[in-house]
Image (cartoon, rainbow over all chains, first blue to last red; front, side, top):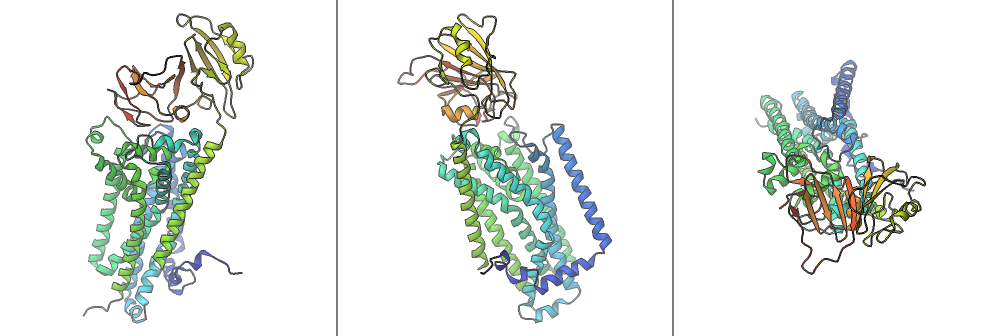
Length: 332
Length: 209
């Protein structure tokens, strides 16, 4: 009987058996000594434990860090900041790893040899993209596991109030929404939020490759890479603050009161795409508050899912463009 | 090819999640409700119909109701208002803890209130009540309390917080009291409600006019 495995669906360059991917990973491993890798792992674990302790301590002191304190579970409140920082770290790491994989190759002047082979450059760029995803697999898993747990909690919460949670939530929603539509839209929210960290990391890895393909490996590359990081962190901070203003809902604050409905809608979408990657929407009451407090908020899930698909498509096209650009003959 | 596969996978996951959401909703509806049951429009709580009762017969009748802890019913001393009598009893349901409930009884109206509300107790939340009773006729602000008015029922919530309106209603809000009044049906133009009040707009922010 034929065995169906996930690897059958993966392109050859994304499989660990592919020689180019193996070479990239082995070379990356050799760049750092075992001691340096161990030190980095210990530092990372200690920092993660520190942030987790900070989250627990804040929760015990009844300080809401980024959450509204209305309907979020203790686990959600404690993990929110930890996951937020881990997501930002994963995004930055994807950009830096992807660009450094390719830039180091170009600096070693081995790239001209790669380009001579048929589809060599393109294949090599895709393998580096896959290597980034492989290197970040544990971080991605650490981001996904809590999201899967929160998705399960959302489904469990839906059984509450005699199974009328959804019916209660759509009363007063603009535009008026039927139960079948609400079911589809809630499923879209959950799916989009589950896919968003993967899409963000994939997009950043492609952006890292595109930066090298566009700017080479010299000073312009360093500047472009630094600029991309700064833009990313600024977008993260702006999206977080705008989204939190809407979701944490202090209706008496001037900032909230003066915001128009389209501004609130855009702020929530920005929060889910560039800020916390939709983490706040992994709580049923938060989703329902967004639906009812913001006109057309019920359509946020559909918009977010569309954006995730666009992000994945852009990541794909960007990596393909980087591959074809990197394969061009050098000038002069 | 790759893009098509990804799109198909996303579409499949979306359909699967929609089925899970619909399934969870169905499961919630199919599961027998646990918790303190709401009185119905006819003024009956479980099998006990309150209007026209002799107050002396209430403790024995209450004690026979499902979920009422035997021997826990007693008549509270003192008078709340003219013609009103108070009873206390303990109620248990399912896996939840025990909740002491006070019944204030009058020939025309009766009121259930929780005493020392326990978070794990069977006392209903606002979402439970609205799931059963549906949308109220009017939402009123009275002092530091918000009340939801139905044809016969009134639900009182102690959820007012912050410097002033708008106040948010949430399904998780605690009900401070459930009363049922014997009264005539609403006239054709609808019942008149005192201000400040608002029409029902779901679990949203309310600004009372």
